[in-house]
Length: 121
Image 1 (spheres, rainbow, N blue to C red):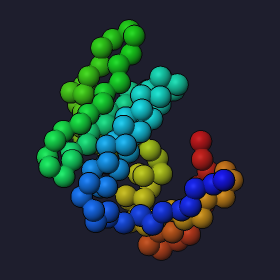
Image 2: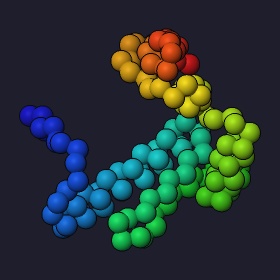
Image 3: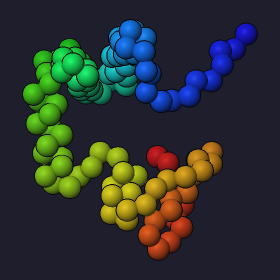
């Protein structure tokens, strides 16, 4: 038996919202940890709750200890050099459009003036 789809909107009941936040935050951190281990990548996740509490996860490798400050520094360096980590994001930023209709190994990009097809790597 499959679960029904939920509508993504703000949860009005405060206690339900807090429970959902806690469970989804835990799931997000778990996925970040799995991504870091399986793909041997550096991952940093920062979450601020509605009450202002900070929750963070920073991956570390076995050869060096990488923490959140080094991940943020690496991100800022990439931003300063205009070297976005995702080429699709770079194209979207440059053209001010959006990506629609994923098709097997292609994405259709709707830009300001043209319709382009991007190949996934």
